[in-house]
Amino acid sequence: MAVERTLSIIKPDATRRNLTGAVNAKLEEAGLRIVAQKRLRLTQEQAEAFYAVHKERPFYSDLCDFMTSGPVVVQVLEGEGAVARNREVMGATNPAEAAEGTIRKSFAESIEANSVHGSDSAENAANEIAFFFSGCEIVG
Ligand code: ATP
Ligand code: MG
Image 1 (spheres, helix red, strand yellow):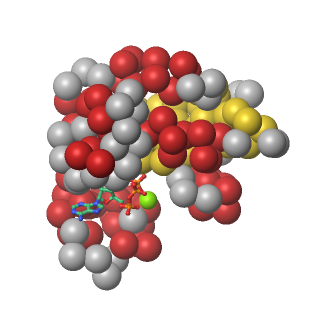
Image 2 (tube, protein in one colour):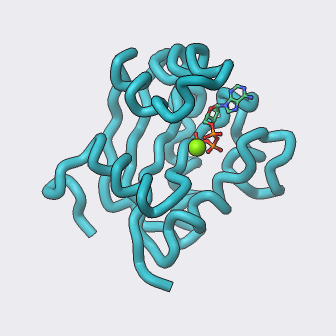
């Protein structure tokens, strides 16, 4: 499998509980390398643009409010099959359905406040990485 990159976001519920390091430890234990990382507060406009694919979903407006409710840590992860590997270590969207040892099983508060985001395809990963990072900010 090829080395690839994916976008990860540590969401406001996790930064609020000071879990950045705990989440990063799980990512690194899963064989993912954090090749870029920054902490920022999303504006309403940025959250709406980032989650535009979910515009028609009933939770869209709540999700954007949640994602702007505190700082996030956006990261680029690199590794063999990084998109799928990250989805695996994140666990299911609903923490009640997430496997033992996954980030969401360990830390998520609810289906909305579920601690992390991860790109769901290589194509979306490229777009999401470009949304937050310029090439010179990513150091492999
Ligand atoms: P993410 O895109 O954040 O990695 P995901 O791909 O597992 O998560 P999506 O279906 O893309 O899940 O939903 C995006 C986000 O919207 C979820 O991570 C969660 O924060 C929120 N969300 C999803 N479904 C619901 C729901 N039924 N009720 C409330 N919030 C939801
Ligand atoms: Mg998704």
